[in-house]
Length: 288
Length: 232
Image (cartoon, rainbow over the protein chains, first blue to last red):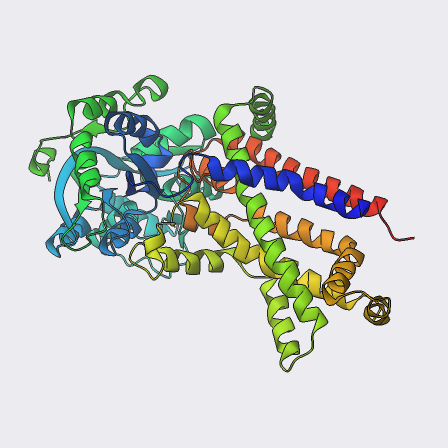
């Protein structure tokens, strides 16, 4: 019998752990949880790590952030698997709201997309007049271009830019898709010395820590604006969605407090802010 | 090279200073995967023993299925568990998606066939006359099964190691059903993926080291017992 006890003693730590696990608060689903489906850029830049604790403290909601691409985030909203979205894919957002999946779409903030590439710039796109021209040069020189390829907001923007340049990059040898988040794709492009489209926030945050060796080659066009909206999932369509929480989150994101956090976030660490607050402004005022 | 070196140094700083967040992530990993292993042991050993000790038509197919399950890809489990647990899915009323409970469910599904497969193998490797001997000595059926499990305990421990090692190092299912929610469902593997994406390689390395440490510690303890109890 001794041996059995010895064997059992092995499982005791496991049992103790599981016992403590079951009494950990928040272990089971709580009533006041809020599922926020958002893009990888808001999480990878660290903005949500600053904003969410303030929101949680203020309202008592527990926010479950599911960080995926904007496309997947909206899919989750369509299926009623999220309560509120913070996304940056304006065209598909409009369709999302028009189809009745979302309500109360509000402008939150913007930053901009930039085209990055290795310092050697084999396609000579530095100082290109426009993003379209730069992409044409990348294509005609056959230089490696890394695409997100994950239906994220950045990917949607990139597809729009390719279209504007009149090029279909799909299936080209120099065009590779990672299918990963912004941070990971930046890492891949840095390793492979490729060009890519990225949002400035994630690039600044990552470059500071990882020294990517990629340079900003094209920026500053109105077309390259990266605009974030908050959208509540339509409770008429999905009664299980926590609309009270979604509304609270939407209101919080455009509140003075949150907008001030957004304005100053990253300024100290990166020298320039990563996002620019836009609450209450019309998209037209951004030059769209 | 700088990056790796700096990463390792920072990693040790985080470990030595017992950084709250890193510690929380590590403890959650241990809890979730420990509990999942426990569930898989209860189901795996009991059902595995039953399969091994009985004979019925279709047994070979069933055993093959269990053995296939030993290599069940975590992402596949993650996908199906998420579909089942979706708020508007068949088990949505349980409100389990994006909770640690959901990770335990997924990891239990991953670990159970591993434990079961090893149990079946261990039980079938026992001398076939042993059962008759035990019964002849006047044991009841339950006592006989208990004796057999005791007899097979060393290979069964390999099952514990394989099961635990499989689930604590698994990332696909954890990120899909857990969602990598900060301070709630963020475990070592999902945090490593995220911190790498954020360019925080130092934290990522620290988390990896903790993961390796856990795997080593658990396997060391089990191996130690296994070796000490080697049958004479």
